[in-house]
Structure formats: C-alpha cells, structure tokens
Length: 193
Image (cartoon, rainbow, N blue to C red):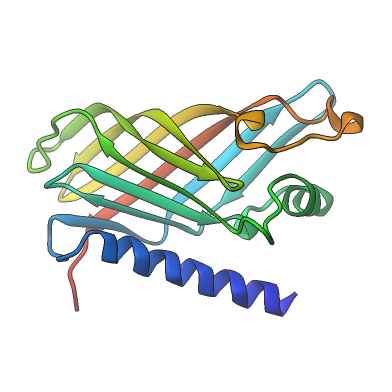
C-alpha cells in the first residue's frame, strides 16, 4: 500500500510540474489553488445505492491572460463512505493502476474582468481525459472574483460509458449511467519563488 501511495504522490507532483510548465512564464497572471484549496466530487444516484466520492487533493491552474484552465486529480485520492466502494472504484471501474490521473485542459469562452470583484457565469471548452479516454466537453461554471482571489464552482454530468467505464451486470442497479461531477476551488495569484 505504501508503494501505491508514494507512486500516487509522485504522479501528483509530476502533474503539478506539467501544469506549471504548460503555461510557460509564471507570474501574477497565473492563479493556482493551494493544497486543500480544491475539491472534486462525484455523485451517482442509482436504485439500490447512492455513491459519492470526494477528492480534496486537486491541482487547479488558471492563466488569466489567455483564459486557459486546467485541473487534475490522482484517482487513488477519491474517498468514499465505505472502504468496499473505494476498492471497487479503483480496481473495477476506473482502474487506477492503469489510469492514475484524470485531467481537464481547456479554455474559458467568456471575457472575464479579473481585476473587478463579482460573479461571472462561464463555460469552459476543452478535453476531459478519464480512464484513458480523451473527450471534448463543455463545462458550465461560475467564477467569483473576490479580494484578488478567484473562486471556481462547476457542476456537470458525465456518462460513464463515454469513458469506457464498464459496470458489471450484477452492479447495474448500484451505479448510475450518468454521474454528477462538482468542482470547487479557490485560486490565488501564483508567485514564482
């Protein structure tokens, strides 16, 4: 278990480095969440059982000059109310050993005045890469600019079949065909040290 946990931490670190590198020159136009400043969760409502997974180890980056936005999670960091759910999620559904990271890379469509406090309804168009499948998606959300920070909130649905996540016939009543994904984060100006 320690080897898997260490490997997960290394993958998370590599993801952060890749995100930062993808944006090139880092300055105050780059916003990033601090550790614990982001949450991605999903909710599956099914006839026999509701399932919720929560991941509080999220990396989020936004470059305000281009509206480029990215987020990523290590799949092993999703936590569930029952240990058996977590085991099935990692081993049978998302196959975390083969597909350890989920990412979204895209761009916010709307013009946002990042210097002015307020709420902005936005959509981000990009690629969601989950379970080895990269799919173009458009995600709705709200950016709240407040005191120099950016609060990001989004809620959208994905179909598990679109990402080749197979649900064994004996569990069809336990897992919904479509799950609701919620993304929340507080982004702060990133200053290179």
